[in-house]
Image (cartoon, rainbow, N blue to C red; front, side):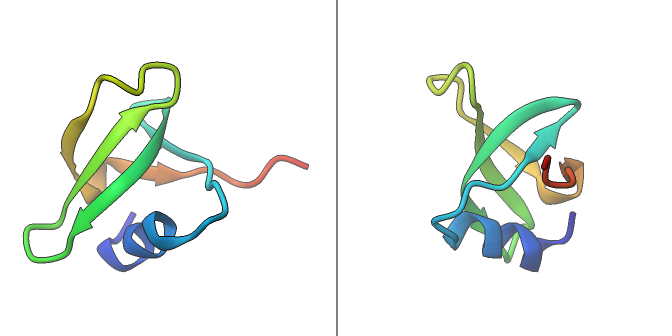
Length: 63
């Protein structure tokens, strides 16, 4: 994923289907200068992580 798209998802009120190594995550914040994202797994919101934006993947919306 690129930094611009990650920022769009973080700012959107609509939940996007984003994964980190196959695990669904929520993007809290994106630092565009360092290209790092603050995320947490949806099933473990207490486990916040800072990861490179390039490690995040947006999955197609399920219908």
